Image 1 (spheres, rainbow, N blue to C red):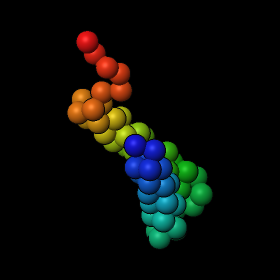
Image 2 (cartoon, rainbow, N blue to C red; image 1 turned 180 degrees about the vertical axis):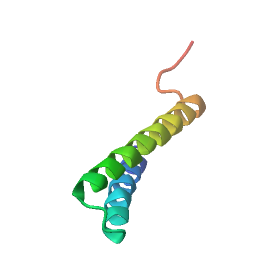
Image 3 (tube, helix red, strand yellow; image 1 turned 180 degrees about the horizontal axis):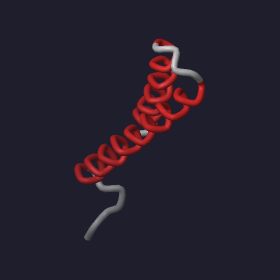
Length: 62
């Protein structure tokens, strides 16, 4: 989970930076894109977390 989370957030930040640089949108738009993509990454990470916990619970249930 830590590895996947780091990769997802890395892609979100670099994707926003790259798109803003590619289309010459400026630093403010780059930060906005990085923020939006980070929110999408957070949503994806929470969804993955829920699926992982459903398959392999963190605590033992009696």
